[in-house]
Every structure is written in structure tokens, then in C-alpha cells.
Length: 221
Length: 305
Image (cartoon, rainbow over all chains, first blue to last red; front, side):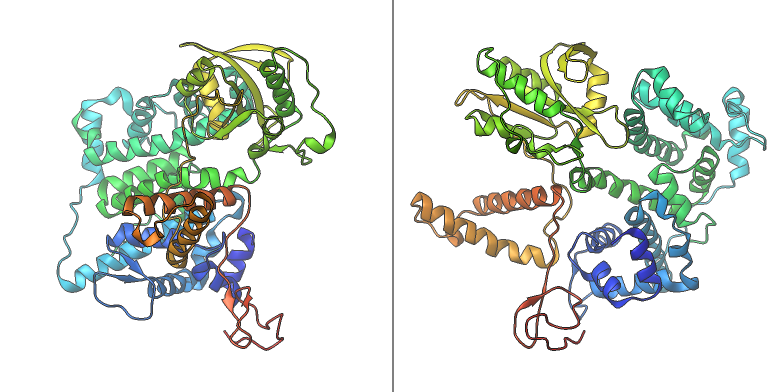
């Protein structure tokens, strides 16, 4: 099945497609991905069966059905929004599943009164703190709208990439919008290799940026 | 409940590398104030890391063919080296596992196999491994990201490795190329650092190097079936080798070795583009039929969902 077949099958509630997609064991099945999400979010074993024994298990069939209904809700908005040209359906659905199950988990925690409100900070305060401490980095990237302090993280994460080639490719192709072919020629590499470098370094880039946000690095330097 | 305006499609673009700098900035800004969103992104990154190795060999290798005749030229060259410099023809077309667009990775070196040399094919090697094989007198064909665009790959015959450079014979220029080590390693990533190593029979300095298999490959029904398959494998080996210990009496680490071997075998099958699919039993005649089949092709009875 192509990604398009899967999307249209899920939207039209095609029984063969949905059964194969959620419960099959073939290459089109999302069972492995969904099981992995459930294990990661709930940190308990995922079992297959009709009955939930206790809270220490997640029943795959129940979870998959709830997730399917979620995908169909709002007139299937989440499925319709997906752009098949990305070729990343399972990655996208994994994101949807993480959002859905974490929402469910948080809702449950609120119901049980065990929910701890995460600490919130005003973005404006963070912005002021940066501008006061390190103004030179804030407007490193030319932009038409007012520059945001978070562009500093965009820059800092780029600088923290360990591979010089990765830094060059991301900065020139992604950040500056230069033509990939010209950059590849300039760096003396093939276009295929450039895309490989971009893809590998993007993962590292996202990790670094997320860590910087978490550590509040933006405020302390 | 998460009421952040950051949507799943935007977060997926961020994690997957499709987000623009402005979108990236939006997600980062939101993560700064929304701990729940940040936890979600961290979970996705955790899982994305797994996918890096999950999909590599699995979804990509089915169409990973080396382009043109570079692989056969490398094989021909390696054969010449192993035969002491005597030119050696490849033989008839039937011997060349040629498949239109190229030679599948797993088929490189088959003619060397046929001619009685020791050959092993390994993923995930390092330049240190190459050096060790070369020092041990083996010949190495490495597969690099090619210049043909798309996912094309290119085979080269590695001759020497140093701390700065890798020297190889490149069939596309019919000559030796000295490439910076860093660039070679980057290009080599294109085939998940795959190489074919060949040597005279009995002289291959072989070190097992199975392809990475991450994630729960044997999940669900297949995990249950795995023990039965392993037992069957053991029965077959025990009969051939004269062993007298039943599978159930094997120490748990040996049983795990069987399961691991099965897992690698299944992954190799998938890597070549085949799929594994559980079938349903026809409730009327008891034969296996494809899942979702409405009418049994054997007894022609209707199968209700």
C-alpha cells in the first residue's frame, strides 16, 4: 500500500486497510510503532487481548481503537493535513500518537488529582533577559519581522554541531536558503551526500536545540 | 491537557527536518514555556533515534543497488589480486547477478564465492575494520554514496587506509583515488558502511559483525512463534551435527542466541524487500488465507470478519 492508499483507506474507514494498518503484521502495519509509543509514554508492558487485567498493562487493541477514533475526529483533520510527498507517514503518526496518548495521560492525572502543573514562564521575560545579557547574538539572522530570542537557540545549536561539514550544510542550505546543488559543488561533495549530511546533522541539531531550551542556556549565558 | 497551538504536523516537521528556521523558532519558543510539549519532543527524539537504525537497513536496502558495472569491475579486480595478478574474466552474463538498475548489495561478491574464495558481507563497519582486513591480506570492496543522484550507490576497491586518507580504486575513473578520510566516511554512510571482504580460503581474518537490529522485531504473534521456529532450527542442526540435547534443555543464553540468529535472519529477509505477514485460518477448511480475504480461495466459502 502507498501512503496515499493508507490515508484514504483510513479516512473512508476501509475495513481491510484499517485492520492491516492497526492489527496486521506486514510491512504496512503501524503496530510496532504504536506499541513502541505506548511503552514509551506509559512505561508499562503492552499486551494483546480483550480484557485489561489492571493498570499495569495497556491493551493494544483498546489503545489502537482510541487512537484511530482520534485520527478520524475533527473530520479527519490530522490525516488530511499530512503531505504524502514527505514520505514520512509513520513518523508523523508517531507524533500524533505521542500527542494523543500524552494528552490522555495528562487528562487521567488531572482526574485523579495527581497532575502537577508544569512551571510556566513568560516568554517576554526570557526575551528581555537575553537582550540584556547578550545582545550581539540576538539578531544574527536577518528577518523581516521582529527578531525573537529563540533565534539565538537556532544559532547556538548550529554552532554546537560537532561536524564542521554538518554546520556548513545546515547553515547554508537550511538557514540561508542557498541552492543545495551549488552548496554541494562548493563543498566538493555529491548532492546525495549533501542530503545525507543534512539529514544526519538535523537529528543532532534538534537534540542540541532541545537540550539548550531545557537547560535554560538561553538565560544563563 | 495540552492546549498549545503547536500542531502535530509542525512538531513532526521539526523532528523530521522539514521545518523552516521560522517554524523551528516557533517550536523552540513554545517548548521554553510548555514543559509538556518539551517532554513530547524529547520522547519523539528518543524514538527517532531508534528509527535511525530501524529503517536503515530495512526500508532502504530493498532498493539499494549499486549502479552501473562498478561492483562487477571491483569483483573482477579483486579476483585478479587474489589470483596473483592473473587477469580473470567475469564469465558469462548468467554469472553476473545483474538486475536492470544495478546489483543488490547482498549480491556483490557472489562470483568470488562461486570461485572458491572466502567472502563475507558486513554492515556498520569502521575504517579501523577496513584497516584490519587489509592488514590481514583480505581485499575489500566498499560501497559509497554514488554521484548518480537519488539513492544510487557506488562500489570501490579499497587499497589502503591511513589516519588522513583512504586510497581506493574507483571503476568510474579507472584509477586510484586518495580521498580524505572524513569525506570517505561521510560517503560510506550512504550504504550504512557496507563492505564485501574477500580472501583466499582459510585466510580471511573474519570477525562477526551482524547488521544492527533495533526495536522489537519479534513483537506480538511473531514473538510467540519464534520459540517454535528456534526449536525447529535446533532439531535440524542437532540431527545434522549429532547433538543430544533437546532445545528445552539448552541454557537460556544459548536459546537467546537462537532467537537472535532468527531475528537477524528475518531482518535480512526484510532487507531484501520481502515482507512477513501473519495469515488467517479459514474457519471452514482450516487452510491459511490472506488476512482480510472475504472468500476462501480453497473451499470458496465466505469468510466473515
